[in-house]
Amino acid sequence: MADPSVMSLEEFERHLARAGLAVTPEKARELYACVPFLTAMAARVRADFSYADEPAHVFAAGRPGR
Amino acid sequence: MTAPLYFLSIADAAAAIAARRLSPVELTEAVLHRIAAIDERLNSYVLVTAERALADARKAEAEIAAGNYRGALHGIPIGVKDIYDTGGIRTTCHSHLLANNVPAEDSEAVRRLNTAGTVLLGKLATHEFAFGGPGWDLPFPPARNPWNTEHFTGGSSSGSGAAVAAGLCLAALGSDTAGSIRMPAAYCGLAGIKPTYGRVSRRGVAPLAWSEDHCGPLTWTSRDSALVLQALAGHDPADPASADVPVPDFAAALTGDIRGLRIGVIRHFHETDAVAADGIRTAFDTALEVFRGLGAEVADVTLSPLQDYHAACFVILLTEALAVHEKDLKATPEKFGEIVRDRLTLAAMLSGVDYVQALRMRRRLVAELDAALERFDILITLSAYDAAPQITNVPKFYLFEKPLLTAPFDLTGHPAHAFCIGFNGAGLPYGAQIVGRAFDEATLLKAADAYEQATAWRMRRPPI
Image (cartoon, rainbow over all chains, first blue to last red; front, side):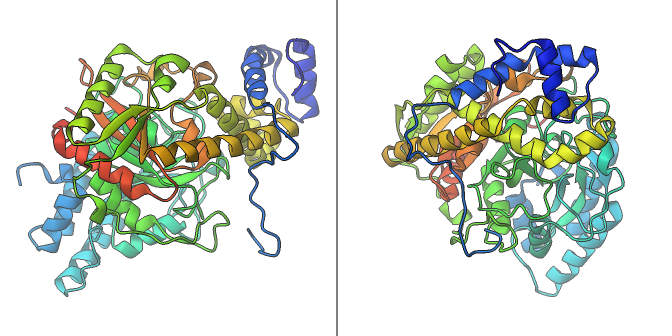
């Protein structure tokens, strides 16, 4: 996600608009206050991964639906 | 029997039904009368299917009389969280979006319970789409805690927790994506198992986050959880995540003998990563002494910070939930309750890279938990930081304020079983959870059952 330390309220609103989500200015201000919590979570899932650290996907070729 | 019929455990009711000392019709009528008498104060049901229930009960009674007893769930009245499809019966997900939704078929879990001979009492309140609550802008009011109706049930299986605790069903289906079985179990003083990911089919259950959704029961005792899980568990080719693994006899594992069981205590989750209230920490330490007294070997274990598990769980959950609801959120946002709408809107701030990094973190944390479970047979931690808060004092964004103690095991898929470890001075329950190796639910249930047999908490019922 975009870095909220440099993301203004206006940028937050534009981001939501690009995602196709319409919010009132009042609601945008309320939700904008939660952005630091999301940023902290997004930062936490970034570890010292190596190239070999694959995501925990489950995908089995040749087995439809699985 | 001295307890009212509606307060019987499944095990006791089943024994009486099997011996033909109790009629399924008599039991069902007692529970329906109880619902009629007190549920207007609890709001646990969004739909009571009384005619269906009585028909199911009469059918069970006739089958048993003819010598065709199906097993421990035959003639047992149950409730179903309103995110499980029920064929021909309204299934709303507690949302205006699905206010008139009537599925054609039962979900696989409901089908299996029907096969086991249960009696369907109705559909239970939930947080909207198992995600947002308690809310007052939804088609139905939020469920209330029977231990004190001014307090929160926990969620999202809110009606399931309230109904089982109050004697409005003997078991309920719930679902658990970040704690939605185990939090209501904690706040309502119940047993509730989130089985291993893939153990119970999700087919026909409204998704919240596909890779973290688990289906399971809430019951009064851990033995009852074993009995219901027995009926639910098993491979379903129609669920892509369903595991084709053997299903053991869960009740047979409940020997009461846990001598030598190695229990790892994830103390840092609720003592330093985030801090639980003093009273529940004391209750937890007392519970550990009970396990020691039963012959278990108890030692602390250290994992990654709770916040790491919580972050990975919620980056995945929020992203998958937005994918589920994106179309409706854009087209008819006004049909969602405010809580779900706001949470989904915030999820749009997460990127595809965030999601993949969370999946990479998930693999690492699964390996960490697997390694801990090589040293210990089970792990234990609290399932909530305190007793239930007041229902009007639940923050809309509580998931951002404090990491959920239940979230780690939805992320990793390990089985986790919640059980009651006592009460506070106001009579509200405290809960803990036991975590085990993948597909080893039997050991969790065995340990919790032994604890329940050694303590008196199962003797106490809500004063409502």
